[in-house]
Image 1 (cartoon, rainbow, N blue to C red):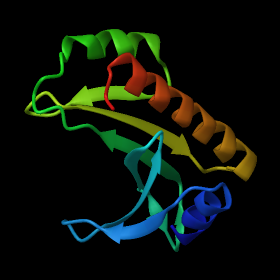
Image 2 (cartoon, helix red, strand yellow; image 1 turned 90 degrees about the vertical axis):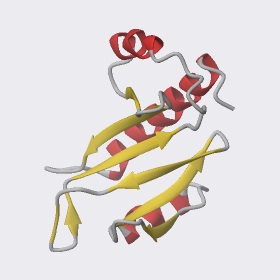
Image 3 (spheres, rainbow, N blue to C red; image 1 turned 90 degrees about the horizontal axis):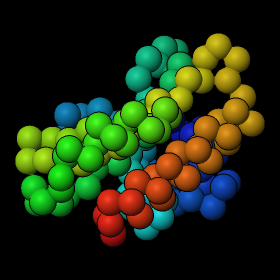
Image 4 (tube, rainbow, N blue to C red; image 1 turned 120 degrees about the vertical axis):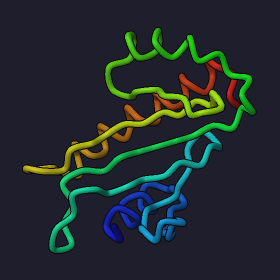
Length: 126
C-alpha cells in the first residue's frame, strides 16, 4: 500500500493511507478535483494482486440511473453503479499480478483518469 502511495506521489498526486469505518486501510487521492479511494484486495505477505479504484458522487438522489446501463455498454474499462438513493459511483479494477509493471500501472491509471473525467463531464458531476 505504501508503494502505491509513493507511486501516486511521484506522479504529482496527493495520496495517503486512511483507515475506514470498517477498520480496513485504503488509499485516498483525487483526480479532476474529485476524491476517490483505492482499495487493495487479495494481499498476502505485503503484496497485493490487484487494486480497485472507486469514486462515489453525492447527488442527493437526483441522478437518472437509467443512464448507467448505456455507460456500461459503451465503456469497457470502468463500470458505473448506483446506491440505494440513486447516487452514482464508478470503479475500475487493475490486475497487478502476475507480472504487473509500473509501465502497465501507469497506462491503466491513465485510462482511469480519462474515463473519470469523461464520466464527470458527461453527467455534470462537478
